[in-house]
Image (cartoon, rainbow, N blue to C red; front, top):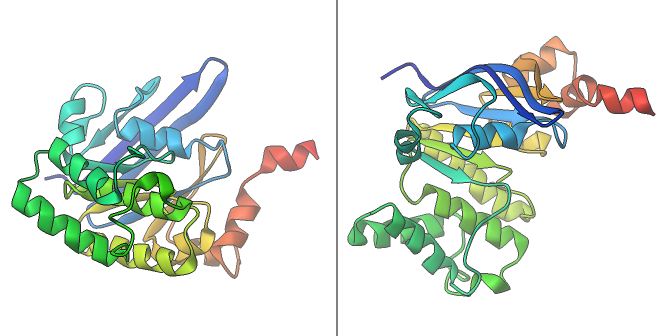
Length: 248
């Protein structure tokens, strides 16, 4: 097995006259919690969609567990779990039924699946709500169920696109602890987030991108020291939004 769970080389994605990802190169190790940070429209979700085989790159390449996302997408899908920015679920089913359905699609054995659902639900504090139909869920509850749907197959690599949006502080902390546990199991985790304190708290390294380009890469501590900032948010504000500032 390669040292790197994910390798991105000169990755570019264009949509008509818009370049969403511009010549991006990254290497993400096994057991690493890697953050991708950027303003709205910076290309974060596009990167996740390419790595999860939902989009093909225009140029460059990406491999996931040594499988090329374009030439071997089926093998990529077998090893990943994806929590998308826009949750996909059946509103007339309960939270438990949605998670179980996803496990069935991955052919998780019935006895393993039942036990796994129980354990995962407890870890994120959803025991009192998991039997309700998801159409009655709050935004934060939907995000938590969406994350469990993404992880029910026990993937080697987790792609979490803004997983804690709309969560209350207690729920976010529970999810943070669960993400840390996944990392301790040697899984590679990509996290996109607009919460800078979340990235600073959780991530081993972060890539800051703006207008599709990589503008900085390193651990939160390294970046704070390099840019003489008291927190990661200050670093982020210094490095991003140049185009917006020029237009003001």
